[in-house]
Length: 160
Image (cartoon, rainbow, N blue to C red):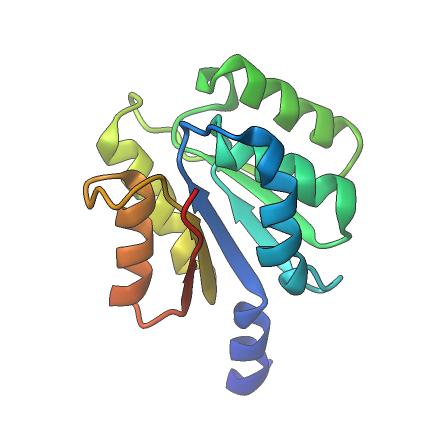
């Protein structure tokens, strides 16, 4: 594969990051229609964090509405995720919608493990879409968006 083809391929790899604390969940499908759908070409590949909140909502929306490839990445193991997230991951695994589930095997959940997961996803992506709640610079979503900026990758921020 030539460098140009590799870069074009990576550009269609998108990381989704967002708050675990969502309100107004009924508004998310509209936000996803507006801000995710434009990137859902059949050759697109999405990386999602596998946590509760935006991660699970975006996974469900993408798996149900597009043919793009989907990879879920968790810091430890799927079993360590919240019950709703585990159920969603298993559901889409069982239907064959997930291309891959990556368990990074961290010793324990915590900020360092989540940041490592988010860097792993961004490093494999050409674009990041963040759904932060507020502007708190210490949130994981902002960490991820800022990490993408440091890597020179385009970002789209959609406050929720």
